[in-house]
Image 1 (cartoon, helix red, strand yellow):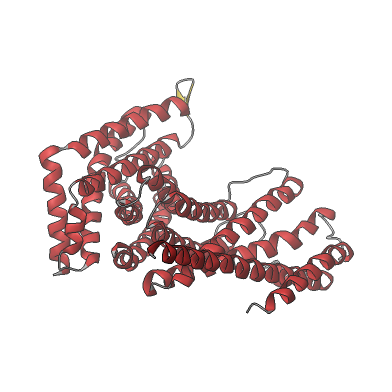
Image 2 (cartoon, chains in turn purple, brown; image 1 turned 90 degrees about the vertical axis):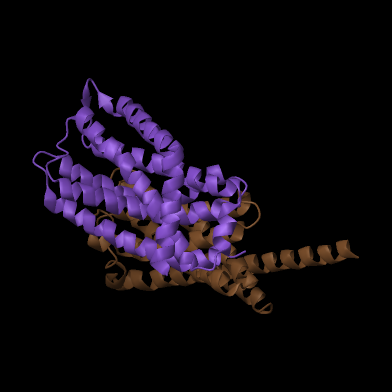
Length: 225
Length: 219
């Protein structure tokens, strides 16, 4: 029952998105624009600063993620469909998991565009440890989106939700961004250091467990009016 | 409860009046000299900040799961105090660091995590103020995540290699400093209890006035 509801909520979100592709296109374009803006800031005399590539990658993910979260729930607010979802006789936590999976998948697609672009522009070895890099990106995205989905869902009813989402989200998720940046930076070095990246990967997984547990625990009382 | 206020006020005044004298008489640390004295303000404020964040987190969880309006008032009072005492920590720290390390700020794990924790509770206050209806719950969720941060901030100095002194400093204080230090801790704790109780009471009065106002409106 639980996983079926989560699966259906995720499939609904993805179906809506595949039909319009609005969030995917705008978010991916925004992420690429972020990369360019930060490249101008962090490239000096034709050469990027140390670890700039990893930093820019995660800044783009965090900013684009905030945008995607806001848009996804704006869509639910538009025709009061979030209320309809909440009225469904199913566990609230399952709805949360479905929403979370939808956003994580969307962000992973955006990252699939971002990573090759970063590799190309900054000449970093993205294929040196492909599995570890994918793991870092997936773990970081889950941690970021876990908190993001919870707060974006709650903010649907708030007046100044566009401003409040980053205000709430960034202080809590900065540890995830730190872990992602340091781990990815270790992989982008020559030669890549899998050991250091593995240590940060463990930290990211730890944060994922804490954030997902806290979110599942608080989603039910938070969404009850 | 109400009767204990004059006593608490008196205790806080006496404690804070005596603290500078005791701090002045405490022995000088051999390498740092006078700068080390800021330790008697920095560490107790940090302790109160942690305690306040925990009070805020627990009260917020009570509010979320039990719908207890009083718990929400305690949580908002504790969040304000976390920000205030956090500010003391974040101001006294760099003052000491400038003399001890030669820089105001260093991006190490303890400093960064303390700043993040402070930002979480500052965001709590922002949401309460500008979030509109239903902001109490949003803020409560923020406090629960903020409370989860406390253990990380505390152990950060022991796990990562940082230049911030570790948590072993306090248990191994020199005898002349130990008494003064715990006196300062007591003073800050009494002040915290007093401010928390007063602030929560003010919120309770405000809620009462609101209720009475609504009753008059209805008639």
